[in-house]
Length: 147
Image 1 (cartoon, rainbow, N blue to C red):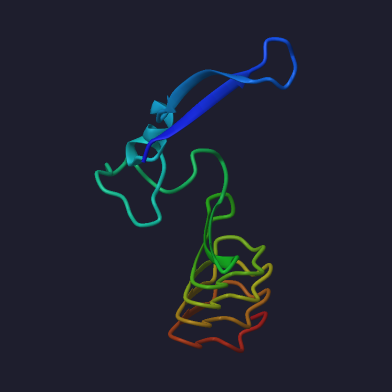
Image 2 (cartoon, helix red, strand yellow):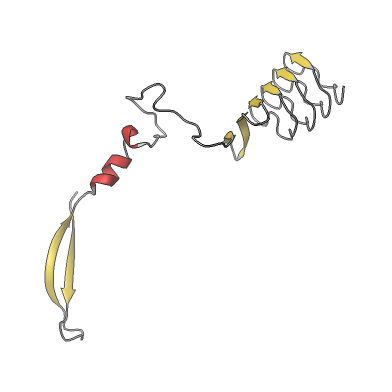
């Protein structure tokens, strides 16, 4: 589809306009480039032609990587406090160090607990301040608050 822009002017500053030009609106090269993978954007329907190590989803500064679902935490890589969480609301309340949780709600209530590993939905969900715990399996270690 082609689009045109028409300009009208009145040299005397009134309202007796006359056409002073017609121009076809054309794509701006930068805008076309921005819509491609090589331009640095990621498409919600997927990308092709990506190069491992060159194209990635992540940060290039000293910031955490956070993934959300329904505006809720669903993944976090914290290179500063050495925490890694994967799963809907895994590690949601965490302020501890060196914790790893994989599974929805795993280590959900952990606050200051450190060096915990929870694998499975709701694994170690009740841990708040306990450290050096390991739970493997859905619901494992549910009642381990503050061990």
